[in-house]
Image 1 (tube, rainbow, N blue to C red):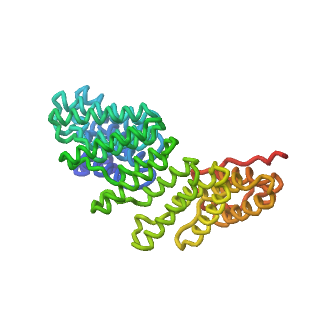
Image 2 (spheres, helix red, strand yellow):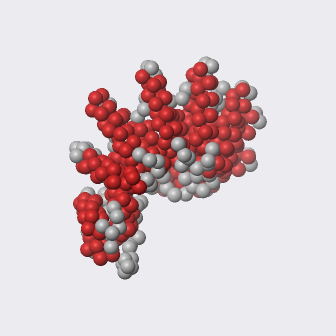
Image 3 (cartoon, rainbow, N blue to C red):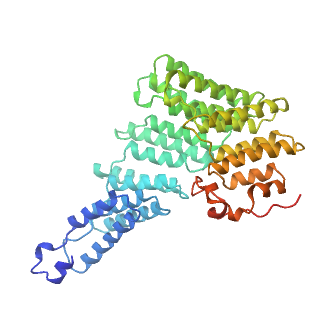
Length: 466
């Protein structure tokens, strides 16, 4: 550009054009550098400026905008999805004003929908759906197949609704979108057809909804999938994810008998897997979700049943060597959770023993390590199951867990808060000291997003005297 501007006649062959800029912008789009999106947009702005100054063959086109939008979609920055959406709206406005080179295509809409769907931003699901609706409207009003919506677009929007924290409203909206897909397919759009991923997203929306009817509605949807599959629709066959989502719905429901229902679903999976269908193979997440259902149930014997499932997983792993069924730290944490929140008085002593056994199991695994949540839950075990008047036992166990936590670098605000609830103020100070000046080694493995003493920004006040 500089050479051409110095002498446009001599360096006519160096005149910049859209192809050259698009190539560089596309490189930024595909790079993983932190400022790739802003660099790509800077080049778009430069193209506009140079074109306005009189360079005719340097005009942004649909590829230019789509590459910049894709850069923002991949950036992971807060507000990136909104920026991608704004660029799409700018394209659409210019196209409607007569700039035929800026007609958005399927790739453009895909990038914006995916950016919104994965952003977690407020109203992201509704905004992603509006973009999808624009696609459908443009295609149905005589648009070419370059804006034809597909199952992938719909599934991305469904996933956004599932993760929107919109409760029952979001789940019902997901079902309406599923019905919309079905209508489009029956009206001749062969590229929009509900598949297993579609149904799984609707199931997930119900599982996350917190609604009282969620697990039963999820069961109805799964049964409908089964009926469609048995009737010949091979594209909607339920799979491990489908069943795991149903188990998760039961686990989160808090309904009486939910843990037994979750375990029944597991038994159905096991039977279908034994019958030769690998699509129903229970995995680590399956078993962990069932344990989680027991942890949330407060039922008599919940901790014992949770430990039994953990032990069965370990035996299966040792027998088969299959890593897909190996219990992990999340599995162990779920068992400890069942112990910590044991409600039945007669179960408390056994639950305490189980929690200590599970912790010993973790530390005896060569490539498994307790994490911050493990220590938080184990301190909850001490706080909830050891008698408050037995200060010596509470302090001894709490100290052992806290020292192990500090040694492994997992001290965060949740650990400190639970420790304070377990021991006296004097004991807390003797263990922790000044929380604004904790050794950095105590927090070295805490995720940057989690609160952590001095570096996390949330300092603990000195404990109140009791």
